[in-house]
Length: 606
Image (cartoon, rainbow, N blue to C red; front, top):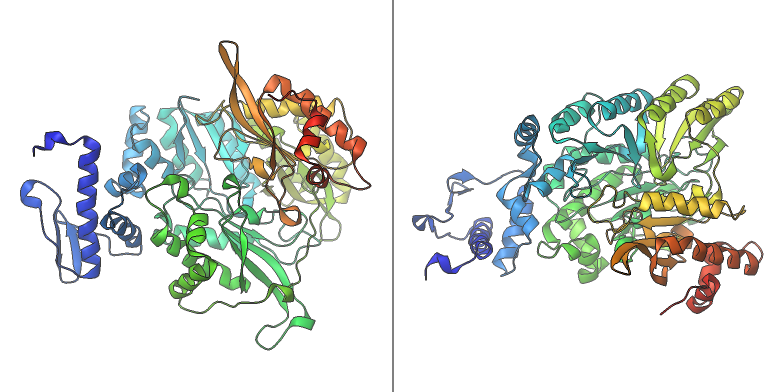
């Protein structure tokens, strides 16, 4: 049969199948047949090495991803297009290519759009004909001088503003094609990198943002997030994942790191003297949890494994390697750790991790653990005492996570003059300035207000989380940031409430704003109105994290945004009228049936 009978996709698949089968044989030491005479791929083995068309395959730790691809193909399965793209070109080797395109003023095309994300550069057309750049700020800790430099860089090469993400991280937007290289150079000159912040990689490692200053925490966690960050950067196999991956450390303090929404969560717990033994001394440990992905309606679950602080990073490395070897490379919707766990069960997965790690992990019955819940849902906003006597931190409100370059420079000046020079980003899309003396509080308050920001927040604004939305993301179904601000304004004009209510607005199924864990969660959609389509949302209620953990229930479907504020207003009015003593909104929402809650909104449901 002539090769004209095959489509390009079929040819690529057949080539990949042949290549994968050959690599699988090479890995197992079996003989390999060459088909190079017909112009195809040739794999040869000799002296313990393997080569494709004369080019040696990787012999380092990154080889495990190539082997996983090969085993997938050898099993008769078809690699998804992203895996084929990674197989054809190592995205970590694209520096010269990216710089060359930048010099020519060109954006990537085809699969290079995906591969360029491995360097933290996202071509976000058609939402914006520009790049977005995401950074890596481990534990969310920056220095004031870095923030000043990032603000200057945004003015020179981006949109003149910075966005704080739900992973305590920063993003630039509106980067022209010819500024991509300047951004890559610029962040590195500020001791910041973007490598692995996008694509199929481990994202920014998060920690408790009050690490080291929280009066109630069990242990500092920012140092652990930083160690994990450097482990990732210096282990090449950490870049061979089937899909993105999240790791978080929670120290048991006042501001949650949302570790239970991560693929790997490390939650600080205590072994008290009454439960201690020679094999399990009294002290602080980390409970290992796995499989969180709230966009797929699941939280990380305890594994029974208890780790000393210095064991967390190497065990996380072993977990990632097991995922690299066994994650799904055929279906992007199932290419997350949760689905390996669902398929295998926790016992089998931990057994594989122990083999990879080279030792048995400590198993401890949860009844022996002291699990503390110190969370204060308003601790990330306003002025609060630190554990250091006479020192305070302030949580600055950033409207839906955005600040201008001028505001960023002003905040850096405040941190330098009145704080200890630190800026700490939070998963709630705001920032904290620590180390403020009591005598300087009034001056800091005035300085924050002078730059157009605030340290005070209504309970709505303090719990408002929004992704980028359609103004800057091609996947989003609505302008979530603008809608979030309009909704907050509408609610603040009606209520002064004494409890926080978290409202999360996310633009699509990727759930970057984690709508399923909000007291009220909104996921964007397009709603038909006459001959047009307008921004709208599906509404969830009753989500939570930590001790209030739960996935929100569907309340309303396909509500046009301009109709939504009065419906949410009615819902909250009903809550205030019918709540029990000290009853939180999430407890109220879970106590009521969906029909009862829907009746409070006065929505007309088809």
